[in-house]
Length: 152
Image 1 (spheres, helix red, strand yellow):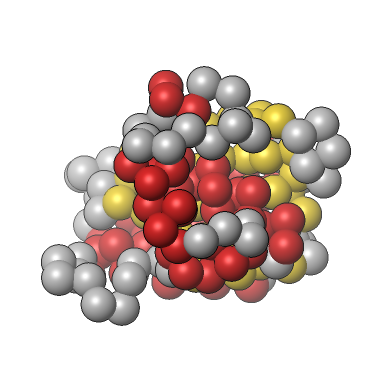
Image 2 (image 1 turned 135 degrees about the vertical axis):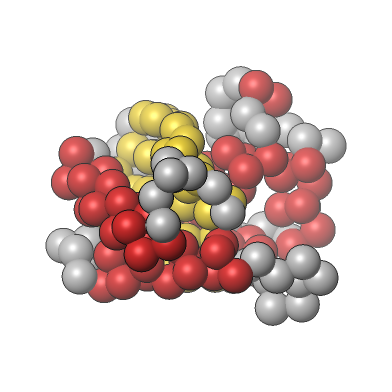
């Protein structure tokens, strides 16, 4: 079963695909949103791209890491992109999906919230993923979200 984990940035979408049967990360990639696109077209681009990714990797379950409710720097564009991704999940063929903050993802991984942050910050290695240190913070969040999506 392939699962998808997504972490949104205002100008891109970082996604990770996890194969739960082989217990390996299949792909970690960043989908850049073209700067020339006005907001409605940029959102359409993201939606279509996510639907393509779901089909290409035959995703069964998915997860979206959403912005924290107490965030000091709320970025409207990120929230808009997250909303479009949620809609793409809802209108796709995935059997289950979740949208969650750090605490939700940590719970799906049966991990303490504090450990989640340590793994994401690279202060603590995550043994289930080869070359954990080679990934940046957003990629790590997407990977952990993909792993959590198994329990969506």
